Image (cartoon, rainbow, N blue to C red; front, side, top):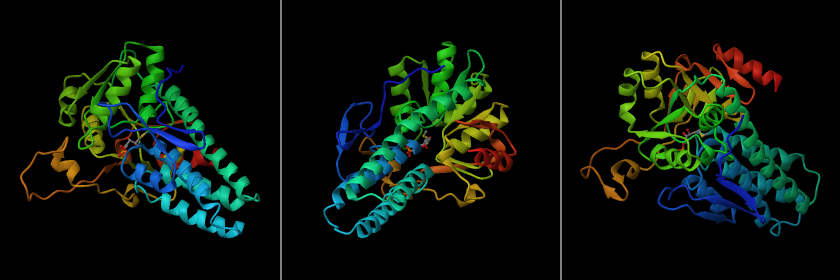
Length: 352
Ligand code: MRU
């Protein structure tokens, strides 16, 4: 059973992209219109839109915007296609870790390569694909939610890290999709949300969207999870993913690995919730996942104010990799994958 969210972070409206500006939530709730491919590249890089599935949708829409801009530059369809393929490759570099972005840009490249239409026809095909990716993601998330709800104990307190909710996807959520579907069956469940330094996606986004939907949520700082686990106050952990290797190693927001270790120590099941488009079967293990290094200012400043001495050294990886041994299950739209992940992942792709 599903519990709909009112949030649609990115939509294709009147021939362009409209997205919720996630950099200003919860102070403001406003939409931004994106009308060029370069604007989309920057919206992804600057995290106006963020979250693995949502930036996949954004990348697909960005390629449509490039196609609309480029159509008058080229008379010859093959030159137009070649230029567009280069733009699709460029779009896929706007952020490095979440593989959904590369996957969605790859889907658009297939449309470009397989098309036999003229320029207008190709733009129509790319638009249809972008809209399909957007709506498909909502359906996948609902399935993830329903499979995940089956392993949520009655009255559970679920810990999550970062934002893997409606804001991070087409509009239902992966980890928060599990929460939404579980809540539809049992309104005694509740969420503990890690603040998620440095960008505070947990504090700013997860609490915002759960509060909007009336799902009980308690905000904690990142260092508190072991304390609440030791008190028996957390029953399970569900987080999203940015990229999952063929052996189940999973990249997600920095700090996820720490939560997984704490969960293992306290015998609390730690689940990943993600669509199959987040699984990168081309890489054997998490060692091959590129980890984004973000601006030092995210660490040195809070709300524009410096919080540390001048001249200190800063390192700011945006993601970490949780080893597969710490993961109880990967909740996908095709069911819950269990260890041995090399086998269960290969099997699910064979069937898809
Ligand atoms: O840097 P962000 O905010 O894009 O990172 C987002 C996350 O790490 C999410 O947990 C992940 O993308 C899963 S979203 C369904």
